[in-house]
Image (cartoon, rainbow, N blue to C red; front, side, top):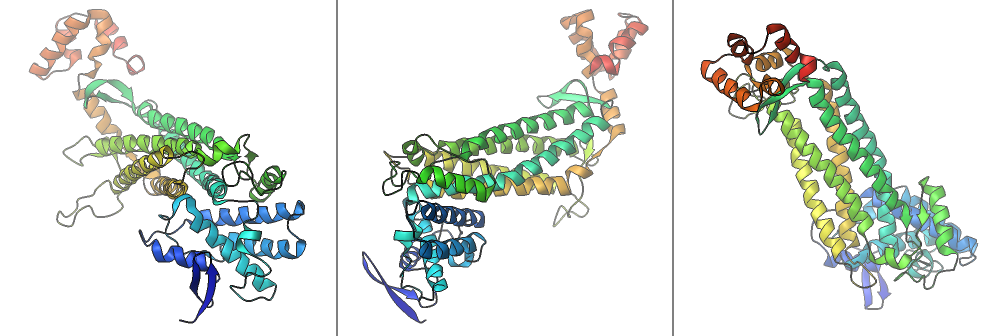
Length: 458
């Protein structure tokens, strides 16, 4: 392979001759071969936007001459548009704070800017990756800022898919508002409810998740860009912080604002941790819903079978005709991964030391992965499962009539102890509570009908 030689503080580095990146990327790519994972494209897009905003800001503040600022802006826009994704080969598990990611972008943008000016790759003249592309910035404020912007970009799609899930459950709430069934606690028959009420619980827990995530994402709108190395804004124009946030608002169309204390945002990543916790809560609720749907779907002949989940694939390599609840199984598995990733984020957020948290790339990778996973599983669930769930009304009625779950409604009239004795007798004689009460003439039939009416019971 033909190479060019670049020099950094550690000495000469051989770089592929036509590579648009430089020596820092080569060093990082040599040492950090850990996971075969890549930096998420949405993060690279957001990083390009931050570099573009910085170049615009430094030009406005007369820190960068127009002749250098304009080619940097053009190159940064190309980077943000995804033109150089293949030129970011770096593993997300890398040197602390994410310096390789930041420098890879600086090198690509500097080399491309010099190309625009008719210069050779690797010359870094007149545009230098550190002096010009990275002007008034540090990895320490860039990576958390970019992570927040990337999370805000992707959360929009997440919340849209979650809204569709809520709407899907709500359609069952309306359709089956009067279909009575057995409510269960401890997996035992408990008291009557309607199918609509059962679906309403799932709908409303997701509504709370939607509100929680919407509230938490507002904290991601507060940016520490301009804090530079530790938050003091060293080497940055006094107006850089305010101006770059204004430029980012224009470029992203997000409701961004500058933080009051950049010392805090450089070292404290709990806004990302708290947002991750909101995703973990949603994942926890989705696991609960998945388990409920599997239980109610259990069968088709020897189980509950009050609902039927749609068939998406053969369920067994050995048992012909068997159909599994594959979609909700995949959703549940994915949610466990989300919870695991959240724990990694928690560990990373704890390890901020003095003026910096070096675990920003670890937190970034797991947070953006969690948003991607949960968005995709909601889309999968909405498309291939939720809209085609069948409610077996006859089966709901059959199990309700066989159960003794109406007994609790008799407690105000007969008392807990006597009602418990009636339940025991009904079980032994394989009769309904209604039959036992009428046989013993404990309550007149007309009054009993009112007590056991579906409206009264639910």
